[in-house]
Image 1 (cartoon, rainbow, N blue to C red):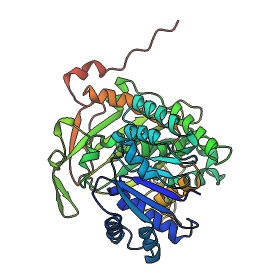
Image 2: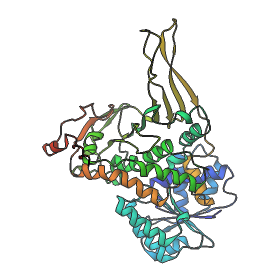
Image 3: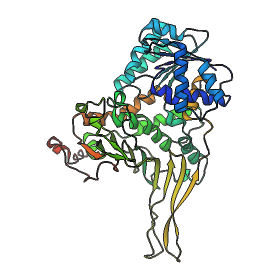
Image 4: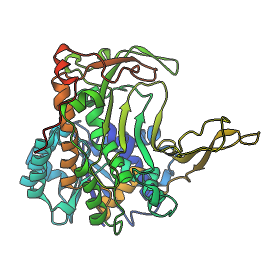
Length: 476
């Protein structure tokens, strides 16, 4: 296990809200197996003592539930360096020490290339690892260039492109439910499943994240990485093992099978919108364009929805709908697997049998199966829900990811080719949206999102040539 962790961006929100509590959780669980040296590198002109005081304040805000002894151990292990993390000399000072180091880039993605270059010039000790947050690049070309830079720095096995969704208990249970229950796997295909909805709707608005969010939007922030990862776990073929090679090979297969959207498809199978003023939970929410730090001319979306199809034997004919929105009226964070209706009902006019829906609830974590049963009167149909609550996770998601980094297990990180395939899926959408082929709709904060519209909608005049499906090519 690596005994040194260097965090670049050590005073940021990610470090405060997730990394520090994750380290304390690992300490409390006895998973670190001994002292871990934490080096924080940032722009603030702080001493190590000042940094440890800041860590204590962040634990009060984000980790008060953790044992005091664990919090104090993390705090005592920390040192701080003021550093320009794109400068090789400053980087060399931040990673100096005995033995390999895990370098966590808790930074804006635009800084990844110069920081990786600086790490290369500074010289990483043998056996070191590099951790990158999403999004990995800004498009396919930048992801490919980032992979090239990383390949010059460390082996692929030492690169951890982390996505904390993959460490969530319910996300792991998607695989468990599929692969450990004979009742599900035989019907886990398009013959029985009509649609899969992967949804991350949240009541949270921008919450001071304009510096990051206004440059990415909902499609890049959520769908390109988090929700496509969930798609992979839902749709993948059963792997031989859950080892990193077998699991990640099957995930890449899913992304490669996604049918690329044409401009016609993007017009009719995607939506984008941003929120207007409204109220959520008694709070007044300003319009997105009026949030501090937002540049309206960027036309950044806060709501994105994409319908995809997979060209594979198992899933031909099933629709996969990926959706994420901010400042909505209710939180809905789930994977909903909608089964096809039964072919015949022998109950006459005694009610309607709604399609079965298996819901993997992501927050709060749980499992629900919507079925149809018999009501109070004979042959009267009524909807029923069977619910299972998940036990508390042994470690928070970031705790699991950090443990994998320190122990060198890349199974829950994203491989380089997988990151590139994810960009391949969304690039046609980004291209069509850049051409303004899909209108940027609006919805009040606190609502259910943009209002329903006709499938062919109305939009800019220059979309008219896309409103009719292209004719099929002649058969030769």
